[in-house]
Length: 403
Image (cartoon, rainbow, N blue to C red; front, top):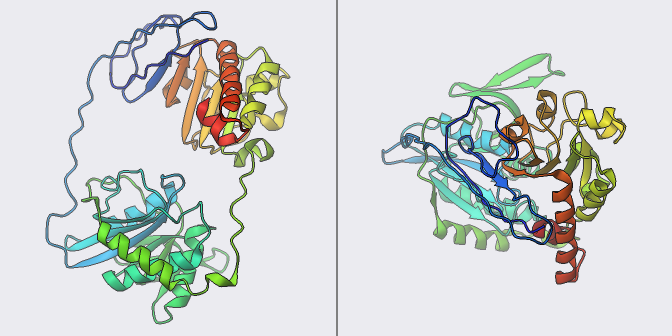
């Protein structure tokens, strides 16, 4: 089956009557993109008819400040494939919300950045795509950060206190600047000061704002009423990049063996980055498992599919099962009960295949395919095999991208 796909965005008209799930066109809710597949035999072309109603008008947010800035604060973050996680966004929001009208918010990003830096509230951005989660370069990152601090002299440096990149870099920075105050595991922050837990969370210790602030997760609301300038400072990028390579004096003490990517099928379901999930609409379990194996994805299921004995209880996703946070969640034949939607609330990209265009899962999905689950699974299997033959490789990333 050839997949002729059109995406539709915009439109706010909602029909209160039940929508015919086999109709050849769809009216989407605002912001939802939907795939509509023609109901033709494999190998035949299909045509798609789309209708968009209404328009989305959003009032532009004002700039945080229009005054000339005389000082700065610095937020530091790492990206994963160009995207900032929620913890990093919270740290940036903290820097933005605590900055006054004459303070510039500078964002240093290790890794590529595809997010809108202005919407994040940053005024000036320094992006170092050669570093980030894909590379282990702690000395280079520390040297780059130290160089930027010397150039800007920021009043405060905000860093996510996470288990890997941010937490390690923040503590390295604190150790290298012995005369600078640092606060870790910060759980409260405002203009008057910050607070952290002590004595096994029995006591709340408070102090004024330190120079280096390592912020815990879920401390700050990321919704901002204004925008930053969002300017990329290419000159500063070049200066900091050069300083990072020159200043990394300890990089000869170890050898980077690279990053070993574990297939999602070999990981625990709540740790998998790519999940293929089945619901009551999946009758041919063997085809579903074949597709999951071809994509090397972890296998999940709805409660109904588990209760029917098609999948084991440890594969159940939802409020009574496991909560997952995959980058890609591909669902076949799942209508989207509230309990299941709760289990996938942290997934980055949700793609659903369902005959019922009015199913709750359609509203949650970023992309929806309105067609028979079995037909789509067979079509994807064919495309996976073609991608492997054309590229002459079994590389998981290549296969997943082609599919």
